[in-house]
Image 1: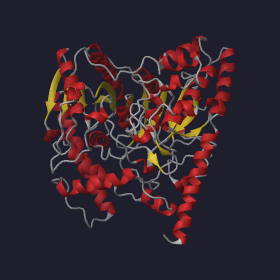
Image 2: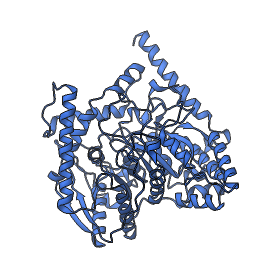
Image 3: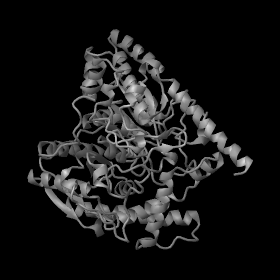
Image 4: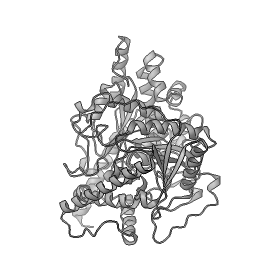
Length: 571
């Protein structure tokens, strides 16, 4: 390496180290876990199987009081709001409890980027004073909420894990941040993302690697992986991520939480840090929530939809929350397994169990053929659209930082796919960029029309699909996300519902990848105990219906013999 290259390398490494140290310094000394506590885990955590949830790691750290443990473990979002409203809890004590829990979570799984503990406690005291006067700041009064790093919060960085954006302090809030504050929320942390925000491994050169708390040798998903890990450890009651190819749903799936990708332009997504070329908006990113129950997600949507969000963000369709009727029995379409993207045995089993349970309870199941669901075609359109913008590549090169391993894995998997797929698009080599975009938009419109006809043909209420080919997998190996990306191409609201886990029934199953297939490797022993889930979706702008039916299906599945991953009663 030349001296010039060496200096450049040192430069970005020093900048990143400085930022990480600044973040760590904002954790009060009395909230730091002891070396003796950390010694009980197999180190390094990222290379060894450590279950931080079933072993009650947060509780065993000894940082939170018994009351703080109760606040963070025994209350749902709805419970917290009720207790804050009737005086059973103060915003100050709830905020301190979640700040402390987030601090411990970060020391275990590296999930945070920006820490605003002092500012959050000051705001909580203000909200308590307001409550003492008999006033309320809004429907989220006093509720701590975590946000993904790409949201601007005045006075903090929004680096999105890119060296290029270090020390570029946000001068104002993103519109959604303003809305949440106006609704009475307390924002206290920002959470980690992958380099470029386009992989499922929440690893970058600035903040490092976020770990999956169910098994630290596995990734938490991405790009909202910091949110997924934090919420799984109950370090946040409600978190806000973003999703352009599965970035809310994949972390929810990997970390055993609920996650919802709304229709584009329902939730304010403007005024955020991006690593794309300004003005290029092909497939729209969506802001969406993650929580440990669907009622928390409903509270978020209802509050934001009814806040007239278009007053804050001109890209939003100002549609208030709609109350929708429930149907006792649903017509449920089942998206078939793509021959190109085979499912790992636990995912295939859990999907079949969910479908069987719903059918046993009287719901009508309609199996959709692979040639009709066209998952490969939707992904081919999406990937070609994503490839039109090279801004993230330019930012990385200009900063002199290297690509993280997960990006190399996506390149490797994509290269193989390019060699084996039967293309659904014409050869686009030599096309001018606008001509290429025009063709892709035409094909995308044709695909959406085909789905409209499919929906009408079968009179569907909702569809169920795999959330991914796999559960969480070892770091850097998640690769592509075909079963979430196809819904971004369609712009369909979609919801992750936790259901089951990798268990004994999967022990004897093998997974043999054919030459014309692409998937991450499967290792039952490594994945045992990992959360599984299903994905539910409806057509565009039927977000309320999607959520209502997801709640209905969730209750149906819980009434059966299979449940979500077995958490320790206290963590």
